[in-house]
Figure 1 (cartoon, rainbow, N blue to C red):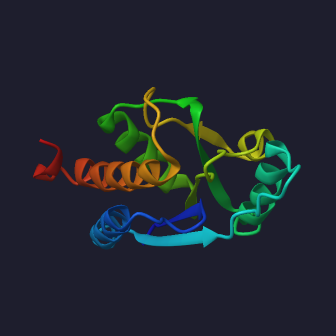
Figure 2: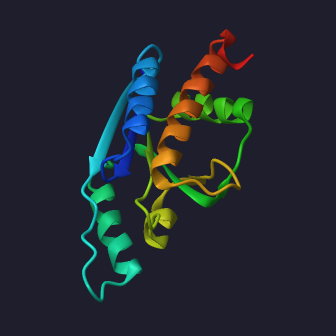
Length: 156
């Protein structure tokens, strides 16, 4: 069975979003082995630069990635797909990769280094979401992609 891993910075604080994440992770199990990994966010200290915080979080993210993984960074600068297009892209990637790894940053996002080391960069929307809301949107779109690939009614 194909595998995906979703690496996020920090724990989702809002209860309704955690419930949504659990809901879609459970639904994804019908189609794929899905792993959810929360890396510890960097502590913001007085005088800390945002770039240093994101770089530290990026190192924690990269520790969960192997050379055989196909890494997709989530960032507003990335490529946007409609839902059928995303399903087609994921289907193609799964046929040639051992595991897809989606990475999302914390409140500050991902460092430029982390983004540039990814195989590709994906944007969910031109709209701005909180980093916690973006996680839920990603999970829902992954679930939708698998229903599209299977020709199921969810998308229709």
